[in-house]
Amino acid sequence: MLDDVLQFLESSELSEFLFPFKVLLLIISVAFIFATIYYIVKVSFLIPTVKRRIGDFLSFQKFDSKNILAKRAKKISTFLNKKDYKRAILMMEELLIDALKEKGTKGDNLYKMIENSSIADIEGIKNIYTIAEEIKEGQGYILNLEELQKLFDSCEEALRRLKIIT
Image (cartoon, rainbow, N blue to C red; front, side):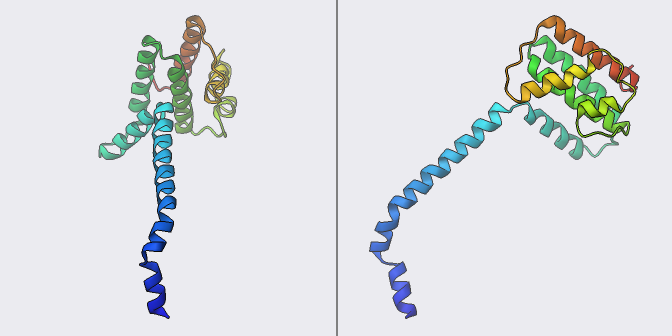
């Protein structure tokens, strides 16, 4: 009985029958690999965040969150100069979330965190959350330079109030 099963599994008929399925599964696997690579490239704003977090973890230095947040604020201004506005908005949102978390502000998202903090009265700060959500949903929000500068100024004012930058 066991010899019959082993003989069937090693038979050339079974191998020939399974060959098209093997080819099909190989093609599907390659398609999934390309889809994964495409997604990673498409959502490229996540890559610097992951690199930064891994670098922070592997640096073995004293963790100075204020200094790190200040460096990230400077980096956002370089994206504004490169006219990479969508990435700058998404980085502003992430920076504000991290700064508010550091100060112990509670909330599920940036909007609720702003409402629960001392920066709720800054004009335009809530627009960062709204525009970032529209960008994430792929609605293709179009920014003009004047509006973006106001958002960045609001973000800078919030970081000053939170004593992240001076």
